Length: 212
Image (cartoon, rainbow, N blue to C red):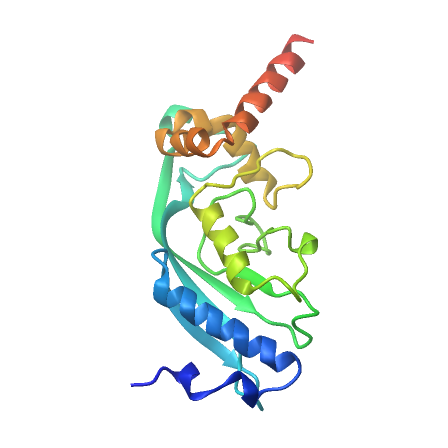
C-alpha cells in the first residue's frame, strides 16, 4: 500500500510549494528511519495544494518533564528532597507560516519539558529557542531543527547561563546551574556532553560574590 506522499511528485507543485513538498518528504523519511521519533501526524493542510501546514512529532527519549515537589524560587526546596520527573514521550508541533520558507517555522511542545531552552512556566509554555534567527529558513530543512530539539531533550545541549544565547526559561536555567550536582541522571549528562563547565562556572562565580 502506497504511503500518501508517494501519490505525489515534486513536479506536481510550483514555487514555494516545491519546498513544502520536499519538507514533507524529508520528515516522512526521518520518521521512518529514526530511533527517537515514534510518532508523525499531519494536523492541518493547505486548502488548495493539500500539502501539510502543521505537523505533530512524538519524540521517544528519556528527558525531564518536571521536578517534584514543584520549583518555587521564593521558597526553594531542600535539594535532598527533590526528585526528577522523567518521561519518554514528548509531543512537538511544527507550524509553517503562509510565507514559508521566507518566514520562520514555529516549533512548540504540547507536553511539558524541563530544559532551559524550552519554556516551562507561563503563557508561552512549550516555546523553544533553537537560535532560529541565526539560521536561514530558506536553506535550513525542518529535520535539522528537529535534530537540535532532540539534542535538547537528551540533554546533549544545555545552556543555562544568563548570557547570550539566553535561556528561554530563567527559572529552569537557575535550577540547572544550582541543582544539577544533586541529581546523578542529570550530572552524568553534564559530564558526558561537556556542559558541566557551565555548572562549575556558576558555582565559582557564586563563591566569588559571597566572598566579596
